[in-house]
Image (cartoon, rainbow, N blue to C red; front, side):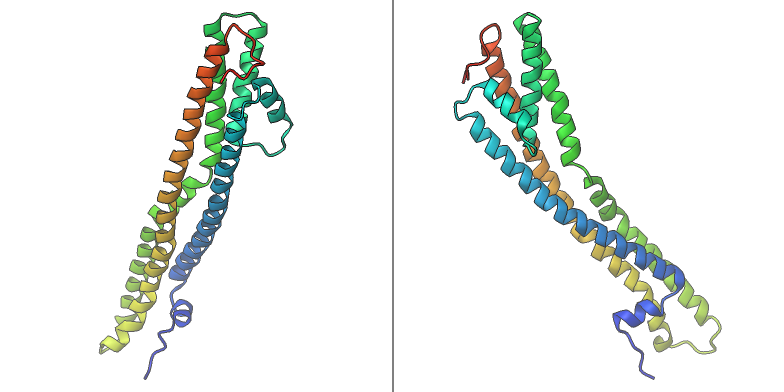
Length: 229
C-alpha cells in the first residue's frame, strides 16, 4: 500500500505535540522574516540619513544654524540628534560661564548618552533573531525525538515491523527538524549581517563624536556661532 509522503500529509498525520512544535517554529520563522525586512530597510534609512547630515555638517554652515535646524526636523538622523544633544549641553554650560574643560566634558557626556539611546533603537529586535537562530534547531529536534518516540510506541502493538511501517512515523517526526532549520538558518545569516552593519554604524557615530568634540574644544571660550571647522 503506497504511503503519501507529501509535506502536507506528513504535517497533518503527525502527533499533536509535533504539530504544536511545527506551528511554533513557523510563527518564529514568520516573525524573524518580519524583523529581517524591517531591519534591512531600517538600517539603510539610518545610513542614508547619517550620510546626508554629515555632508550638511561639513558644508560650512555654523554650528548654531545646524543646531536650530536639527530641532525643527520631524525625521532627523541619529547622528543629527547626537550632534543636537551635545550642542545644546555645550551652549547651556557656556551660558553658565564654566571653564572650557567643563563645557567639553558636559557636551561629550550628553553625546554619549544620546549615542547609547540611538544604539538601543538601532539594535532593537536583534536579540529576537539571535534567539530564533539558537533555539529553533533544538525545538525542532525536540519535536523529532517526540515524534519518533510516539511512532515506536505505536509500533509496539504490531506483530511484525517492517521498514514500510516505520518510515511514515519517522518522516513525520523529521519534518519538525526541517522546519527548525528553515527558521534558524535565515535568522543566523541575518543576525551576522545586521550585527556587522550595526558595528559599522556605531563606529561611524563614535568617530563623529570625536571629530565634533575636537571642534567644540577649539570653540570653547570663543563664539560658537562660527563653524570652526
